[in-house]
Amino acid sequence: MTYGAGNSGDYKKLKGQMIQVTDTDPTVNLGSWATGGNLNTAREFLNSAGTQTASLGFGGRSGSTSYAITERYDGSSWTEVGDLNTGRFGLGGTGTQTAAIGYGGATPPGNTDVAVAETFDGTSWTEVGDLNTVRRAVGSVGSTNTAALAVSGVTTTVQA
Image 1: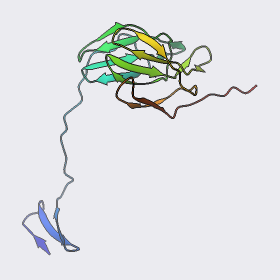
Image 2 (image 1 turned 60 degrees about the vertical axis):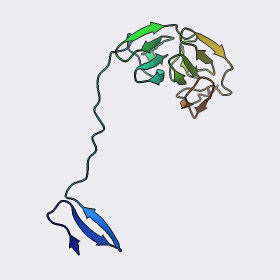
Image 3 (image 1 turned 45 degrees about the horizontal axis):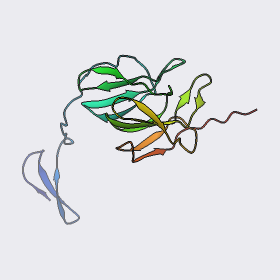
Image 4 (image 1 turned 120 degrees about the vertical axis):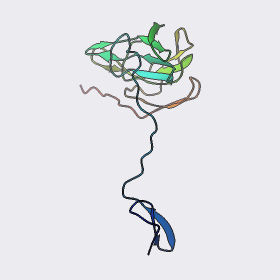
């Protein structure tokens, strides 16, 4: 049994419940992507912390070069600030622009996995207690530099 008129907006009874039937799937417009400023140093496998208009990008690599670079984003452009103590890529991280943490990752040569953990205070990085297990490609859970989890990741075992 069909209730209503036309192809769109018809109602049908299905197992005792009235449902609306439409010709197409409904769409929701959640906005669109926008382009912001580019990083000053292009790199891959970096991590980040913060929000859309107050964030950090730190670490990373380009080819065989690993970076300690930290850049701060203000919603339109990036500015380099205090660098990590240990340059690495594939590190985990979370927090805010003024209270971030970065941990794990890998360093050249040979892409050696590390357990290094550092906190950022908005100006500089300070090494803190290392991870229990060295690893890179570390997943991150948390929102501050004092309440974060390092999850999963990859460990490399060198065979003799």
